[in-house]
Image 1 (cartoon, rainbow, N blue to C red):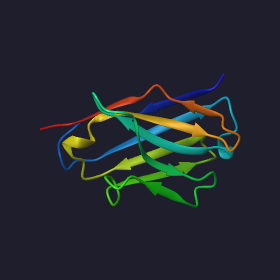
Image 2 (cartoon, rainbow, N blue to C red; image 1 turned 90 degrees about the horizontal axis):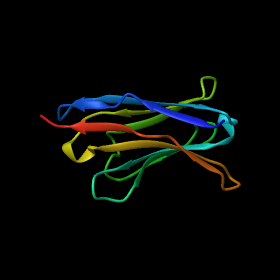
Image 3 (cartoon, rainbow, N blue to C red; image 1 turned 90 degrees about the vertical axis):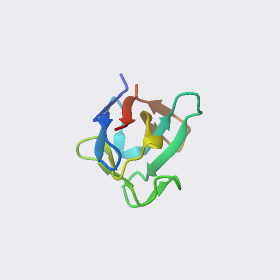
Length: 117
């Protein structure tokens, strides 16, 4: 069955870094655009970053540009989100999403990121 399993979340001080990972199984990973979303308490889920199927192009929310970097390893069926210079407003549950050109999409269960001193 399809699975997306996120890991790497946790508690970090402002200015710190975290690296999230999302391991996929049950579908052809390299055929899917991969994205990271986040949802803070009381707010809607928002797109953080996305990366193309081959990894050649990516896009970011304005709020994370220059601080976050998305990457993928198709040999390992894994997508990453390197998060640097973290701010309290980055606190949220982070989800990875796989999306196909035909409209199929899969979501992970999420990993909590808390930025606090």
